[in-house]
Image (tube, rainbow, N blue to C red; front, side, top):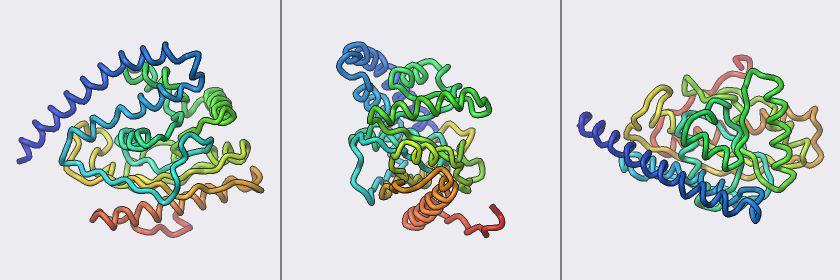
Length: 263
């Protein structure tokens, strides 16, 4: 059974990569055709951010659950934040794109240098950043603000990088400072099970269940930059609690509650 699963997983990946590669040609044509009529690149971004679907849909041993506790923001400016368990989080977020979501992703610069993937990210208007480069972080913040001012949401993983242990890391306050500065609500998203399906360093998706949940947006009216840390902790706790609820509901191990002093 293990051998058959591996063969089937490799075949599914092969087909998915072929579909995504061919789709880039269509994406490029749409990008050229809509540059004047769609300066925010909403159509191109939605198409590109939907391309993770073949990776999930062609692997029937991965069960996908998506639910929402909020009305989906079909393009309204907000700062989307979530936990980050695995590279699979981005593929799973394609489920949001096909439901009408449209956002620009803040992603590490090295991804933009990759063929196919990097081309699509540039056409979609996603935002590159070099984490340990202060100048790059400042430029990325400017681009985030510009997209929000033009009415386009931005998607940020406030842990900074995906979890290597399976436990959620602390949320840094950068995304929350951005939300307060621009008056944009914070839109929390929760991923569960993606690390079980695709652990760091793995290539083949394992038989598993993955879940995504949209929470109610968190308003920032009346807050100042001095409140960014408190807001980050509040949203972090919301996401951690919902993640544990999702894992419990789908039969996954739940992260042990950490004491405040252990943070």
